[in-house]
Each structure stands twice: as C-alpha cells, then as structure tokens.
Image 1 (cartoon, rainbow, N blue to C red):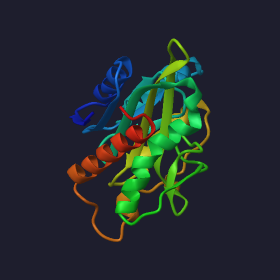
Image 2: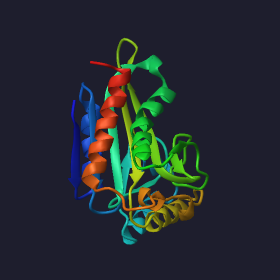
Image 3: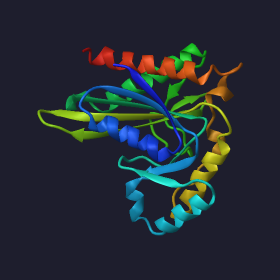
Image 4: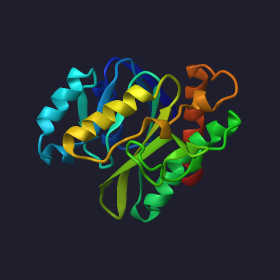
Length: 229
C-alpha cells in the first residue's frame, strides 16, 4: 500500500477523492490539499432554516460551502490545511474509539518528530469540536472524523479523515465558520482556540513534501500494525 498525495484546485475535488477511496474494496491512504478555500458541512444542515441563504452569504464572503455525508460540524479547508484520509474494511467489533486511535496515531508521531506533544481531547468553541481533536497546549491543531458503512458478515467500511492545520492564518477560516454558524443559529466559533503546526514550532516547519511523506508512512504503519496484510 502506498499513500497518495494530490493537490487539488477545489475542495470538491478532494471530497471526490475521499469518496473514491471509500467506495473501493482495499486499504488506502490519501493526502490532499486544496489551493482555494471552502467550508465543508454535514448534509443534515440542509434541513436547517435559512440554509440556502447561509451558503449564499458564505460564498459571497469567499467561502463556498460543500457538503459531506458524515456527521460532525463545519470545517474550513484550503491552503495551509492538509487532509489525511484512511479507507479500509474492518470488523465491526473494532469500534469507534480504536478507529480514532488508528487515525490519530500517525499525526501524533509527526508531532513527536517535530518536538511537539499533541494530545487528544475536546477544544470548546473550536470548529467541529470533538473528543479526538489533537491539540498543543490546549489549542486545536487537528480535527478528526470517521464514517462507517455496514457490510456483510460483521464488517464495515471505514473512512477516517483528519484535518491538519499546517501554517498560515487560522483566523479567516474560523471566522468564516462562525459567520456560517451565526446564519444558521449554531454555536459561535473562536479563532484563538486554534493554532497551526507552524505556530507551535520554535523554528520553521519542514517542507510540505516532507510532512506528507512522514504522515503517509506513519498512516500505513498505523493500519498495518492493527491489520497486517
């Protein structure tokens, strides 16, 4: 298995790559980054009052909105954000917690390589908050989500997604989510509870190619350790 890296022009292309991995039968790891910004929210938001107005307002602010089939909350994607995806078929008994541990492990290992201790846990008032955020000194750097599709014989298709804030200014993305939430009557988001890997580093961040290579190798190792071929 090899981790595939793709730079896309539009977040919709990245979501299509993820859907393709999820639809396949084997194990796969994908990493991608969009050159243009956008918000991604759950499809369930379509049922909320004012949704069409909210997505139009967001697009007018320079943040078009795309939808995904999984749960969670709204996230900003684009330059400075690296997306890592794992797709594989697992026993249903493996469980959600073990799925998150498998997903987070390669990024925790990346942090160790950079001299950072990334800790799992919730980050109140962050976008798409959850118990399996990875944070440094209480500020969120990584958000995670997973989707499961039941198969036969007690097995499920697993898709795990991690959003890694690499560099750049996190404020515009957080403010875009906050404005979108405000239009939908959802909880407010604070930019200052987030940070990038570059923010956490004492020195310069390694090149994107080096980070992609490290995360890809660690992701494959995380899968192989639990599900050896």
